[in-house]
Amino acid sequence: MNVGEAKDFLVDQTAQQAAIDGVPFSDLEKRMMYFSESDPTGEDPIKLNSEFEEQYNSKEYEPKIARLLKQAYARLKNENSNEKEKWDDAFRELKKGDHYISVLWDIGPPSERTARDFFIQIGIGVAIAFLIAIGIFIFGGK
Image (cartoon, rainbow, N blue to C red; front, side, top):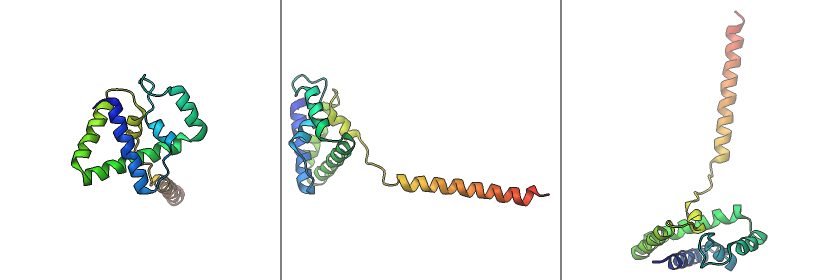
């Protein structure tokens, strides 16, 4: 599998997953998955990036595509071992170069516990401060 075939396969699987999930997935979003500064056979990276930045927010796009990629992989893993092997081969090929789709694949899911963890840490800090204040009040007066 060459780089072009690898990207075609992964973008197609992502598009299929978007359709299954009912997630909008535009032509420009697909084209952006092909982005590479080092691949001379692809679209002009500066022009593509400018067009993309005018219409999309990377902070929203990247987690969306990362999620679709991971869901597509999970689907293939459960449904079709041959396609899962093809997926693995595609990423092995892309890891040899500098391709945006590899970056998208490596993005972890956004933490759903971030706010909860923050408040737990604040609560622990307040509890420690309270215990110190009680200790000073009780033992500081003697």
